Image 1 (tube, one colour):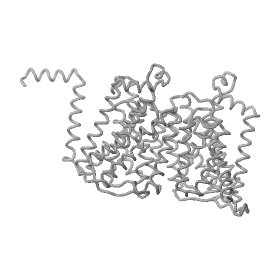
Image 2: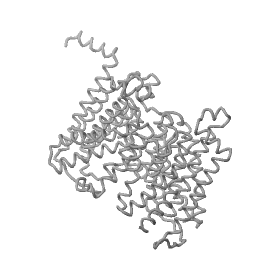
Image 3: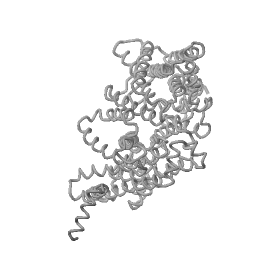
Image 4: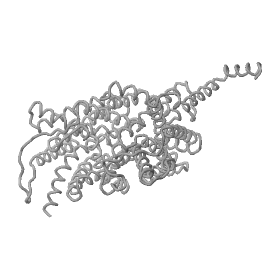
Length: 288
Length: 326
């Protein structure tokens, strides 16, 4: 029984980090209607940025995570300005294939530049005893950081002017434009924010797990699962979907081994699509 | 033929441009058929691969180009076809043409099953879902529950009782069949319905087109040809394992080829496949490490500069007639 509780707790700790990444994906879709297939690579690059900052400059991993956030946000803004803004609102095919091509490029670029060996950030903060087993403090720190970031995000969406502009843009872009909101800036900002969230999540992942360039593909699959669970476009849904997936994977690994746990994310997506396509907290469907 | 007949024929060639096209086509076809006798085996294998690519591209186009539903899971059907045909031929001793056809049939059945729930979803969800299923298939093929059937994560090597010549002509025939099927589809009312779905699904539904049924049909046909071509491909490769069967590269390859050539057109995929073979042979030897990266960059550039592909661009400029049959 205790083992189960530990698995669930670990799942929550892990899932909230995943959920950060998923929130970025959901945000971008909610505001622009684009499925950002590059998101996995943003996560991966965030992880690597954190790793290299720690490895080459000896920076504290948590600090490196925040720097990674800024780096990936900048990358995302750059990609948006150069390529992605051209396909917003056009045929969905174009944006999907474009982000897909970008993902392939970034993935293989990283394989080429960083090689595919696994890297690991060493952040020794010990572990605390919990219910007869040990929980690594790393994971708890990452969980807290994730919660803080999520809290900041929700607070700013609710109370700041820009947050209101973002919400307005996601609900009805045309009326937002008429009301004087600069829709192009908002889209750029939201894409950069999505990248920032991915950067942080990636950094937090680097602290906990070994990383290599191909985790991008794996992570985007998990992000899809979380976003599908929570509903495309819903931020709290994405976070909760993340927690749910974290728990499912943790418990699944415990009972059935790692291979089956790898199938949990895809199976979740498929099950959600069959039974409740709009997710548990789905927002109004964007007309494709 | 007496002199006046020859004169008339020469006149025809001067006035009717299409005769030139047919003449060239006949020459090219004759060349392709006679190729194994003329050139060395390596070049033959390159042309063989070109046929497979043509079939892959056209099969992918039948689903995505005609209905507008982006199939990010093409490799699922290639993998099913490859595995099914290999298992049937090697483990159960079925005659190879039947084995290959059954590979296509199994892939088609897979498409029917997957399509029955995937195609009720909207475009965004379908795109995500197919990608997810592709990744899941790779994992599923390695689990210990399916290993007795699929030989597990390490795959298995085999030599199918097929000669190289038979493989070459089969690939030629299959690629021709795929293009012909696409031609038949796009010039039929079925094709018109698919194009209607692509342009305006709600509108199509409102005039009485059963969009789900048509989409599933297109999906199944696409899956059949994908599986069939993949069967030949894996027969040539003499080896199958989950990562090569459900490979991400051969998933993206049809996308690149069709985007390059002209999505939703008949000859676009063929053009894209031919160009791709040249590019692959050429770039693979110059920059093997950055090849995939370059392909990613190419996809990005294509979407930004030539969103429809070459043939679509030609059509929009009026260089090519804007009929469905091209």
